[in-house]
Image (cartoon, rainbow, N blue to C red; front, side, top):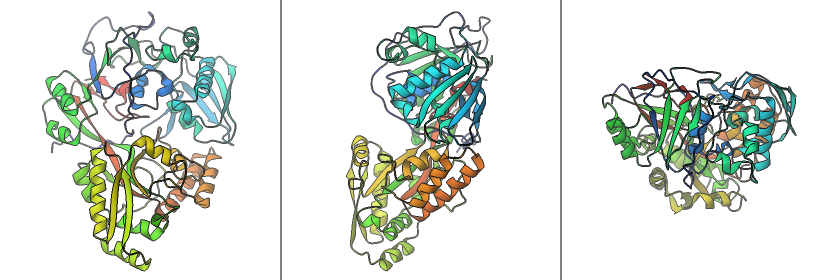
Length: 523
């Protein structure tokens, strides 16, 4: 394999699929958005390939990977994360959470929207209030939002109904809107129809139009508060669903960035002149979740035996193409605040002993999986073969994801075993730990898991703004979760990216999935 192929220690998460094509009425912004009239190496657009249709550019749906891929270039958030998973300011020059984690004071930097209007505290208040009122998409990250008090043109206080140390990180997913522009086009749906195909942001690029179906053109905003003439003068997003087509277009020089390649296509492309292929670890982990409340999998020894039976090394190498790393616990390997724990491994002899000691013989289990993902189908078959080696019969049943989500509403309907991936909208350990393992998180607690000690640890973490203390609590919770054998944590997955050598800075999204577009530069 070429030495160009390497692992980048950054982050992201997996794809979300959405349905309808966006309209082509993508209207350009005002004269405040200027391009480089002098020409230069950045003049030829940088073309980025994406997969699956985009139904809206409204930032309320930034929980969708495709929407977020475009919006990260059009909009700014108040805060974001750096390469070390530390929260840093974006539009906020200062941010101070209260000691009781019930409020956040913020001061905004001098920044302008694409129409030349200044970004103000009122725009922040409007954006947060609108997000909470719509109650969809990214609003799910705003648990406990009470309101925003504007204390000056550039200063504000965000208030919460209860302590929530995760709220500051959640602001990395809330794109700030030009309130005057949206209000002028609000209609009866709080501007959703308007924002589906229009830009109301302050980001490094503005939306240029008109655009064609599944094609979006963005132009560099030279009045951006963190402007850089090294950024491409324009970006073109092209929808290309097939991995093989993306590969061919990259070879032909028709696109510059691809992050939808299969492992096979990436291997074939690796070493091609003028192209760099990278395997990027992201915050996405493959797991098998047990129903820990009912049936044979309520027995901890059974769960531990299944953990020991799976061929982690073989699955990662042959099914995932080695694109990832074997898991050590409930959180993907890219997260901070992970305790030192050994990687999982296969031990068939110990697995048999556990079942024998527990008096479990002639055991038949059922596991559901999503057949739309061919890797899952192969992993399910691999586990079936592994369990047969320890005398356990595993029946495999396909399930649609929507049906799986419905099944999570009650411990009685949670699948006995379920093959699924888990990810976080932003890289705070509490996001995954709370939603997946806290007992009151009905609908996202994939195992029906109840552990009062873990609940207490996660509750205490939510109530403190002390990052160090919170990290210690998260580590303790992870050790308890691993000891309880709640899931077969298989491996942290990687994302393959390829790009032409005319661009640099192609790396995983800071928050979200795919490529972090604002970092791309013309070589």
